[in-house]
Amino acid sequence: MQADSLDTTQSTAQHYVHWFRHSAPYINAHRNKTFVLMFDGEAVRHENFKHIIHDIALLHSLGIRLILVHGARPQINDNLHEKNLHSPFHHNRRVTTRESLGCVMNAVGSIRLEIEALLSMGLANSPMYGARMDVVSGNFVTAKPYGIRDGVDFQLTGEVRSIDTEAIQRHLASHNLVLLGPTGYSTTGEVFNLLAEEVATTTAIHLKADKLIFLGNQQGLLNEHGHLLREISPHQLDQHIVKYQDSNFDIALHLHNARTASLNGVNRVHLLSYTYDGALIEELFTRDGIGTMITDAHYEEVRMAGIADVGGLMNLLRPLEEEGILVYRSRELLENEIDRFAVIERDGTVLACAALYPVPEADSDLKSAEIACVAVHPGYRKSNRGSQILSFLEDKARQMGFQQLFVLTTRTAHWFLEHGFTAASVDDLPETRQALYNYQRNSLVFKKSI
Image (cartoon, rainbow, N blue to C red; front, side, top):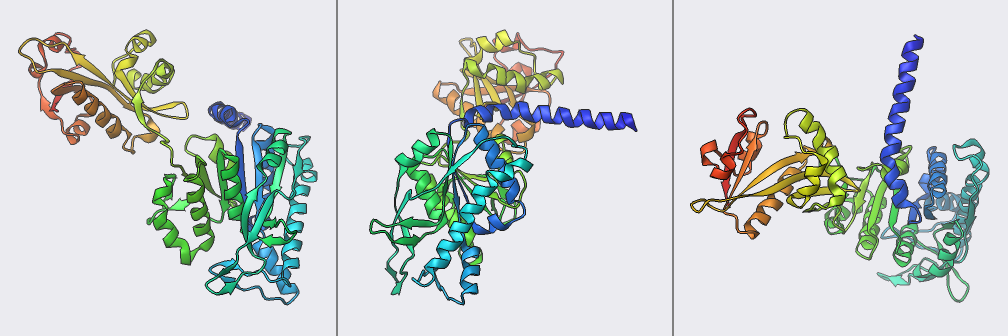
């Protein structure tokens, strides 16, 4: 029994060490970066919110510059109900009457105090015990009236006019957390009720934030089959916004603002669930994350390899070489031939590779090249990355004037047939390549005219 317990403890420790090693590049990459994190009033009420606070404290301790933006809709509704006041909605935006403004201010102020308390006193019972965090809030958001829309006067409902980015940057540079709510102030001293999503988005754009993170009631964006979409471009969001417009306005609002932020310079926008314990940590410190990322940048692209990719190539190729699927290549050989390789890389990890070798030709031969060392990371073999890198090298071969391609394989014959190659024999290889054929491996030969 004691031995079983020890084995379990060792296994857990090894799993932690493995995770920590793989998260280290992200810790380094995120340090001194600016993240805007938005969560609504429902998130503040949820039992998981105390864990979110602990994770926020952890992110702050790792040197991430954080702006927190909170909503307050359910809290405002409760205050209105207590005072028997009615504050109607038009197109899912509250009409804030002068009588209801006190309920708005009371709710926003209460949430701000609650969050500040959790970020200070609450740390005594958290993994971040002893960490010092200063939280600042203030009149960083200038607002203007939302005005009259469709004949409806929104009164003290407003929209963001400007963000005091200089003041926020000063506080971030002093290692303070900045806390914003769904209110703004006019130049004449009035208070306006704002959408927290718009406050977060405008702040992220004006600060040129590295990330904007929405914590909502759904774990990212789902496709028509209910499967999580891990990555999507802002241009693909329109159909999803229309889909959720009537069924789940909160998600539609997140998607609309995610699209706006992404198209206005925020490189990565993340959609996560506030109900999932550890969502922030998994999304930010693992390669594939746990939610949906919206980006207009090329997150992964096929490119020719450089000397810095040698270590990643070795990690990808060694297991396949040990199984005998690929021919062994030493580090020295990889360094010498690195300009032959194409790679797909994500966050420092090589996910796929292939190499293009010109075949010396006799006068009677067609100009030929060999595609070799095609490999895909085990966790991504159901994706199309192998096809991507093969297509990339075929295009490169055409540009270089090659007329036909050859591949030699012992395990993936059907895959190459599916990609337009035809079965050939050793005799079909150019004479110079026939001389190097390894009869012990007995590889199958395939060719393709390009």
